Amino acid sequence: MACIDLDLAHAYRPKPQSEADYALLPLKMRFEDGGAYALLGPSGCGKTTLLNLISGLLQPSQGSVSFDGRDVTAQSPQQRNIAQVFQFPVIYDTMSVAENLAFPLKNRGLTRARIQARVGQIAEMLELSAQLDQRTAGLTADAKQKISLGRGLVREDVSAVLFDEPLTVIDPHLKWQLRRKLKQIHHELKLTLIYVTHDQVEALTFADQTVVMSRGRAVQMGTAHALFEQPQHVFVGHFIGSPGMNFLPARCPQPGVLALADQELPLPPHAPQQLLQAAGDFTLGVRPEYVRVSPSAQPEALRAQVLQVQDIGTYWLLSARAGGQTLKVRLPAQSQPPAPGSAVWLQVLGPHTCFYGRDERLISTAEAPST
Ligand SMILES: Nc1ncnc2c1ncn2[C@@H]1O[C@H](COP(=O)(O)OP(=O)(O)OP(=O)(O)O)[C@@H](O)[C@H]1O
Image (tube, rainbow, N blue to C red; front, side, top):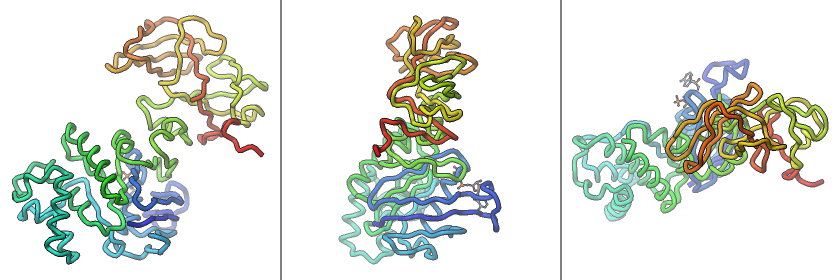
C-alpha cells in the first residue's frame, strides 16, 4: 500500500490559457495509506481524469504524483503497481472463475498454495465460492463484474486499487449489497481504495473520505458527516443531500440584523465575523432537514406561503415561498403537514445554518481560533 500525494493540474489541450482549458485545476491532495476514498461529482467534472493521473494511464500536464514520497509521475500503471476495475467487466471468458481470480497472482509468480488460499478468500468475500469452477462465458453481467472486482482486490502487494464506476452494470438490488460488501472488504483487507462515482449514496456509503468535484475543481474532501453538516462550498451543499441545501441571498443592513427574503431577522450570536462587521452580500445555507416550520408567527422566523406538499413515503417534502425565494423543507412522515396556500413561519437560523461569501463557507465566531 502507498500514501499517495498529488500536486498537479491537467489540461488535455496544449498551452491552456483560462480555467476553462483545464480538465483539472491545480490541486494538492493526499490519499492516506489504507484509506477508502470516493471521487464524487457530476459528469465531466474531472473524476476519471483524476483517477487516470493516479494510476499512470495519464501524465499530468503540470505537477507531480508521489507514492510514499517517491516521484512516480513518469511511471506506468504497472510500475506504480496499481490495480484497476472499470465500468464493464474485464475478464477472460475462456477461463473459469477461479482461473480469472488467480491470473493476477500467477503473473506475480506466487506459489500454488498461496494463490489457492487468496483466491478462496476473495471468492468467499464476494460470494463467488460456489461458482469457482464454472466457466465465465455463460455468467450474468452481474457475476462477471463481481469477478472483475475480485481480480482488482486479489493482490495483496498493490499500491492502491482504483474503481471507475464499477457498479454501473450491476442490478439495483445487488448494487446495494455489493456496496456494503466492498466496505466490509476494505475493513478486512486494509487496501488503499479510490472509487469514482456520480452517485452520492454510493460514495458516502463506501468511503471514509469523499472528494466532491465540480468543473475540474476538488471543492471539498471530507467524511459524509462533514459534507452534510459543514459544506465548505455552495456546490457541496447543493450536490450532497436530497434535496440539497437551501440557499438565500442575504446581507446585514446594520449590525446585528440579517436581511433575507425581503424580511429582517436578528443575527445569531455565532455568525461569522464578516457578517458581524456587515461586510457585503453573502448567502445563507440551510438544509431542508433543519428548517423548523410553525403555523403561527415567530419573531425569529421567515414568513412564507406553502406552495406544494409532496408525500415522498419516508418524509413530507414541503416547498414554500418567502420574499421571492423558494425553500424546501423535510418534515417527518408521521407529522401533519400544512396545506398548500397556508401561511407558515420558517425558522432558518440555528446551529446547522451555514454562511457563504463568494461560494466559500465563512467560519463562524464559535469555530474561529481564539487569538
Ligand atoms: N481524452 C480527452 N481529450 C480531451 N478532453 C477530454 C478527454 N477526456 C476527458 N476530457 C474532458 O475533460 C473533462 C473531464 O472529463 P472526465 O472524463 O475526467 O470527467 P468525469 O467526471 O469522469 O465525467 P464522466 O462521469 O462523464 O465520466 C471533460 O470536459 C471532458 O470532456
